[in-house]
Length: 263
Image (cartoon, rainbow, N blue to C red; front, side, top):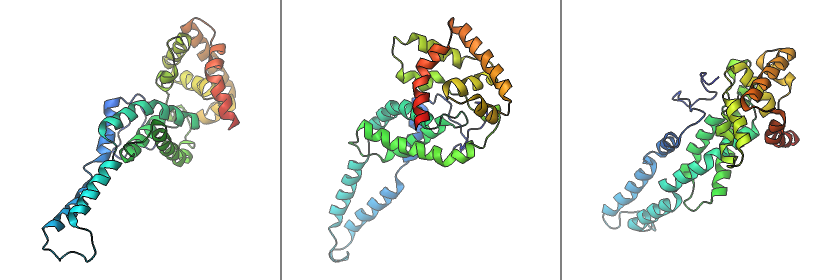
């Protein structure tokens, strides 16, 4: 569960939580940018040529001060500023997180890590004038590729202890409207399930759309055990929200599950 080291964790061993906050994520992005030492060295080299005696440069080369100006202006035009990075990070992280889950509805896939890693890799490289949609597509491409590369590894994992519960409130929060109180209560009830075994089975079947057989194979249980666990979990969620959950689950998760199965 969440206490386990994440799959494909960063080199430092740090594990992003399922609710990585803006400040932590912004720091990771800023750290990835660094001081741009390579560019600084290149600029210094060009500026150093300004102090060379006339005629000692390469024949036919542009004036050193023109090189330096073009290089700095070109870099400034390409770099997205910090305020815009933060704006994009806050606006995109929920969509990217959901997009990774939608592509890999598997509780063994660390969707939070792939989301944070993609934002960290891509945001510093974006041009200043990029649109929100183009930025999303750029980040999403990297996130999906990271998860695709790791797929053989996480799909080989077996057992409840090798899964990671998603916070459904975090995953779907950006989609909910004020009037969606019933759905919000459903997500709260699922997130609040105290038994990890029941919570994992419930999410794999009701949320990810897995069959009892697929769930049993991954968790190392029998089909009968999975059926019993799912029944208990459904009863507990029903008791928590005070209404049968089948119709709510179908209307909230059903369309997404059906769409994914048609891919």
